[in-house]
Length: 110
Figure 1 (cartoon, rainbow, N blue to C red):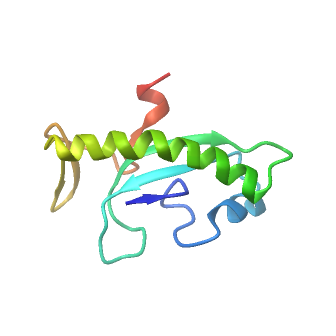
Figure 2 (cartoon, helix red, strand yellow; figure 1 turned 90 degrees about the horizontal axis):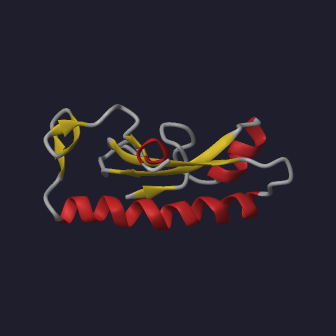
């Protein structure tokens, strides 16, 4: 699944407005496995975008959506290739357990 926030921050709806209201410096998107808990499955991959001073929920959503279109296909490819798995204790890529927040896309693609 993909969620328009940097989980675990802002599960559910209205994520962009919530980030703006909180004065966050960054927002983003998270690809995560689905579990019974709303937006609570193990994160796989996250991408951040800076929140600009003149951002609205719509302008922020557009930039987050652009990153969603990058990270979701990447995670889907890993899953299709059998590289990404859900274990009893979290998500794994190439046999290695992923960190609690998933992979930081920017750290992998500077």
